Length: 133
Image (cartoon, rainbow, N blue to C red; front, side, top):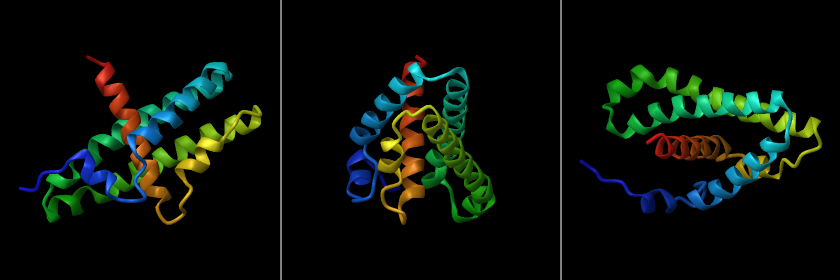
């Protein structure tokens, strides 16, 4: 069995670290506080998508090849929902003339953007998980 650490994750130069995710999260939540109700609903939708996706992603390294193949489509759909939900938040911010630099920070590298969206979703899920004690 292989063991993984946060350091293992951060050794990937394209990883969206906890530090970066925390700054983005703080910025978004500050903006959501001043945004309209529709934006708050979109943010809540993103959080729900993140929790669902992170549950599947967290199991990935524990699955056999056969098990991965069986859940791969579901995981991809969940990942797509995360990206779509956060993109909706960004578009809603734009309509309200609120900053969206955070969105560009997540998707800064087009090759790695999808993984970085997943990283951010896992961070958000982590925040909600540890606060649900």
